[in-house]
Image (cartoon, rainbow, N blue to C red):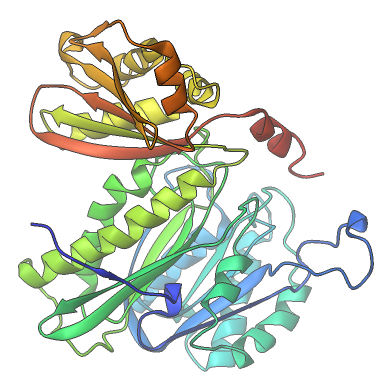
Length: 419
């Protein structure tokens, strides 16, 4: 069933009872090339909190090398019974592969707990940035009281910009929906531009809602939706050490708490999908050095797993990504990526087309390349949003995966990442 949702401004502050803030504290040292001492600094740390305790769900990176904040957050949610009130997150430094990482991540939680008057187990901590550099705690100690005192219900943008690293734009999305006669809202913010590959979440993503829903069902909804949104996202094939998605539900919308599957749960899950799918699209379009959003829409699959495997394989293929950068309609690369995806497909049933605002052109039918107008195909692929439409002609399931082209600038950005 399809539902209609109304877009709402406010990101993580769109839902009732959530306030946020962000500031520059000095985790990232000033760039001498920036000019004068008055050069404007970008926020590098944020805090957001709920007026009341929240049922909380989270998923984490599957990378065996995990950032200290991941370990601390998991412990906190286990101790609190999946309850939280606040999130503190910094950019520029991942606090990963550091001997004192756990100690400093716990210290960040303690600082927030003291300022807000809550238990440290009710605080989620996250970090993103360079791996293997010690996180300076002194600027964070100074920043937390400032953040706590400056929290506001309209300061979502301050928080969204604070978690940006190589991102070029902040990423926020929120929708309004109705459950048991009450208006509810889900809103979120995300960061990510590089080191992104489908394997859980692939970025830092924070989602808030005023809908009342039990912690077990919140976790079920998040785990289900992650699989068909963030897990269908790939920029460069690298799974980060600090990936995390958390959803906080404070229940202030006043709806009857969702405690079992049914219509109310279906509406909530669909709204969560809207927020996470739109954030996924934003993340893909802002890939490091990217000039094009590249989507692979797989249809006609015999089951959802097959559709996911094929779509993900196409968007993560370096050869497909470089072909999209060069506007080269080489569908052999697409067929090759599907062929090594591991999915059980019949290659002699596959149809492939390219779609964009410039038009639609079919380039493969029943597993074989067909004659097509190369110049027309090039015009379609010159657009900044491209869909590779793959029909497996073997069932009724489908999925869309999100990625971007691979450009010269990606190499330059990552070659100079630390320097």
